[in-house]
Image 1 (cartoon, rainbow, N blue to C red):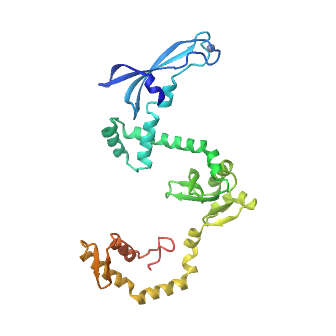
Image 2 (image 1 turned 30 degrees about the horizontal axis):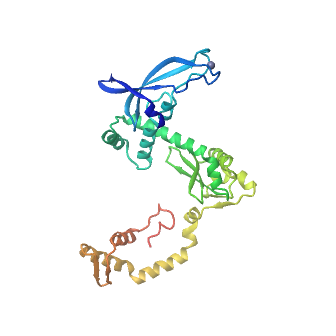
Image 3 (image 1 turned 90 degrees about the horizontal axis):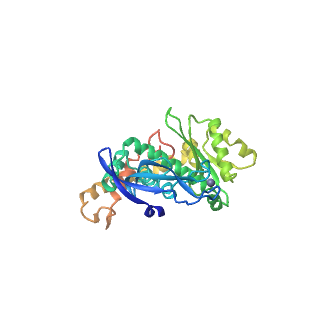
Length: 327
Ligand SMILES: [Zn+2]
């Protein structure tokens, strides 16, 4: 924040019972951008601003206007505009701090509020935090769009377009267009329901921004199939995702092999062996070596949890293949 040092704390002002330092930000330019004439002070505007660097201050922005012609563009402080968006009260560094706390560290609003107060001496309401989070996402999207030329250079060998939608029962869902090789989300949008008319615009935007993909990978839904009609007509391979494919027909496809595997596992009595080992490990859990029926060796810390995971993985009909299977 280069301009910050050029500003001056002039006095402290009492606002809402607390004393805030007042900082002047004078428009840096000396000449009219339009005609080159000298400038005069037009007016000053005050607002409260919070940034991580300055904490909460009262900002007085002193704007300038052309001496000859007041219809020429008004000059504002560049130092201030690199610190905080025009007319707003939360600085860019604060928006980034809150956004990372929310989406990178997965903190809840209450936790963010407490940490901001404790570590940064900034007081924010839950509502303000939500607002800042939304703004952060908007800026991330704008940054993503502005980086498209660089992203396209990195993607010069092309990309398989993976598409998938999530659905929050009745509340609509999220539709994602990914670069399947790199795992990058190229475009995402909210959808009311999963139908071709809702999905197609997102695919159009993705291909307009990133070019045609080398292939499409999707689930077996008819909405996705219809939405990529145009790409299929251009002879772009339209593939079904292996995971979704097996989810749909894996059980039938591997029925014979699975029953053989199940028989082998039952015959080997591996599950009762695992249960016995788990009991043994629990008994000697304080030691870092194991010596017993199953031989001896160093105890791996995560071994009991791993055994438990195998034993408790009983499957369930709500899970997709192969997680629905008990063995
Ligand atoms: Zn001028």
